[in-house]
Length: 384
Image (cartoon, rainbow, N blue to C red; front, side):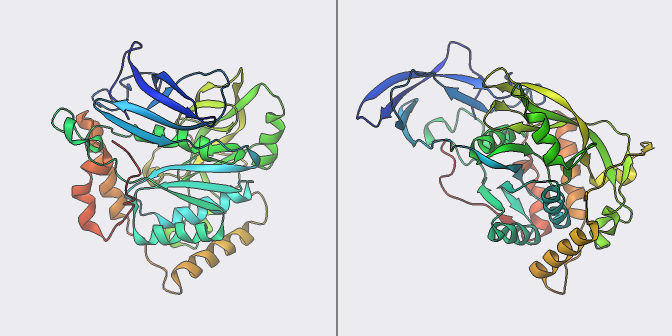
């Protein structure tokens, strides 16, 4: 996370190679959003940046030391693994999250469409959400990544700059998305929220993706938005409403499935840049988005052939119910929608005032008194 820089500004660094040699370089900064400040958060001081240098092959880099003001910070190098067969879905930082019932449906629908792995960046949630996430982690299909607050600035600049958490809005999400694209071990990847799943008009999602991706020029497939509601609501009906979803004609941003070996910079709703000459194609399919406020939308209902579970739907519902019972026992907790409503009111206030406030930091005053939240407090995850 960095204040905007000009094309003439660099970070000085030393690269240390395995053959005991060292090279001094200048790292060029580039905002992941392609602009700084980001047009969605023009008053934010900090933006997500990538700092890089292009090298001729000189052996494996073992460590890097960057120079920040009067400090030297040494960082280890982590190689990007060779990608394997499979399909990973990333969930960007989870904060103040309470909709545990969405998580079970999310995992089951994506797995039924061919997803094999999940990576979730975690900041805070209710105890019920955390228990469910940990269950899937123990199962071996989910990896929980730490995403604590950015933490304090170094003492020598504390008085000159606002804290990270109070001047980032949601820009940190772009940082997490690009880390996830590097972190995933599979060739195929997607970024989605806990209330979204992608489906194809033609076949099982994974089969459709693999067919389209056979064209080496295709690096990503874009799925257009389609709003969904469940009748009855899944939060109190054993998920029966998911069998015959209602589709609403309401516009929204698309999301993409991508080749993780091809993308250079990934955004929430698109790929900003590929490594080579790959392109994005529009999918014969949709991003199904079952938002909490779909029940109050005045959008027109539309007929679509989509099913959340392409085959054996009752078997999937049974598996969801067994998971919920295994995690929570016979006393399944009731869902308290107050948490979500208050969070959305806080976010609306931030957006309405046009101020650059972090949801994590600003909404704490409203959210923290509501329940005993579980926080990620991993020390030294972010350096500042």
